[in-house]
Image 1: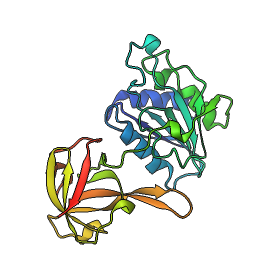
Image 2: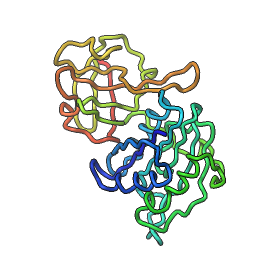
Image 3: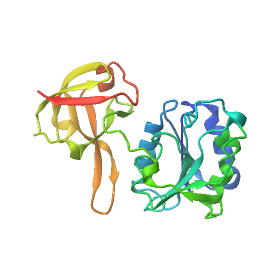
Length: 263
């Protein structure tokens, strides 16, 4: 089994090791790959759940995610209670277990075969993803659905935003939540792009490497997935050939607004 562990613990944080250890206690043959998202970024969490879950992978695949800002109730939290645990089954058989918070399930809500609440305590520990939730994840990974509760309808989950920074990769490319299908421009059209408070000129391209060195491209990127058997979504990226789009826009954070306008 492949387990993608997506959480906002921080790069290299021992929390990843602690949670992995609990999962491997009863899934000893699993291979765990850890992905750290920015603190409290349910947007990045949801983006990567879809990117990893809806693209080709091994038949036996579990995504275990935890990004729980505990923003469902702004009052004091008795017993460390937070957002509830959920289970989603994707059309390709990938199982997704994790906290329903913000945009965590927004990108898969209309694609998943089903989404259910999980009957497990919402409190009991500050570190629920280690102390409370692994037992339910392990049960579901082994095909035991007795822990499932009420079905969650797509309309109970917020839509993904259409104008945000979703991720910044190691090359400084800015992945956005702007769908390539929403762009109605001719290739090589010059545009003004705003990310947060920073503005830059760019060139719309239908392929990033078709722009010359030093040019900022606004183009369909490498991220996307099949929505159904016939429809695919791809996400726009800002790509500075020979440089870093992230630095060009003063190192924006995941979640900042992205807008564009033809010149």
